[in-house]
Length: 368
Image (cartoon, rainbow, N blue to C red):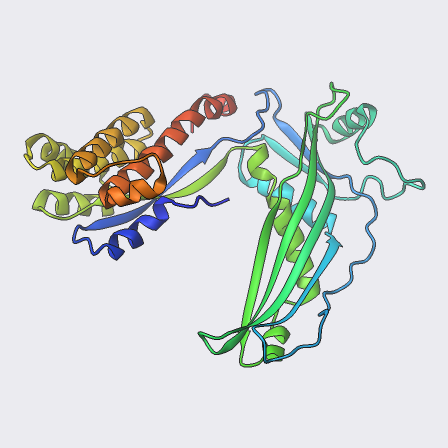
């Protein structure tokens, strides 16, 4: 889930305060550890469909007649069984895309399709051992259930003088991880997430008519559901946003140009010289934050945290306002303190996760 306050809010916040300082936004990609850690010798995995036969899903139908004189025109909710074959394929593709295991094998045919009597979906140790042997893998990751909750709403948007049709689908996959040598699953995951579609029209009927068809909605929701457990199973790349102070002097503007050219070392030299020579506490604060981002881009998280702390302390001295531990108090302290504090918090979180990430990436000799 998204944080209530994040670095993505910084630029808008600074603009709202009418700040004249120049900020530039850059993107950064970094690995985030998974919840589950696999031993390095487990290198081949099979993604299997271990769901039972699901009944046919019924399309969404409005529960009340469309009326155009109220804000919420119609609202309907259904619970459906997601397509396990689509979800299994999506899960396998997404895990393979992370390049964590040497080999990813998929078995999307329902393992229990020929069952004559209902039984527990959990695989027995004998079944796991047989599957692992047949597929030539070390680990079995099984999709064992997939439920969908779809809510369709049509409402009138008074401020835009139009109607909005929306479909919000919450997905509830159940995934178990099996090892042949264990009598019970290694873990059971019940992650949830949601996917959303919307359309607009001049009338309620037009907005509802243009919404995604039910068949397509169920297929796309199932494909999305397959991606949801991945971050719990393997390290994934996360895209973050960072901010750099880029104006106020010739060296700062030149450094910003170097950053755009991906010449980070040249930019660092200018920031370092400015930090050491400047008598302005504000300029020191700005270059300290930029240097922190430099070290993060270079993979030196400890140094990045050290410089971010320097920037935060300098911002605190400059703004000279009472600081509380609350986010509201941080905002009241001023934009520079807010920016440096949130960035420092993110760096501390990354540093705290680093030992776990190194453990999970040890199979690659820490080459990540």
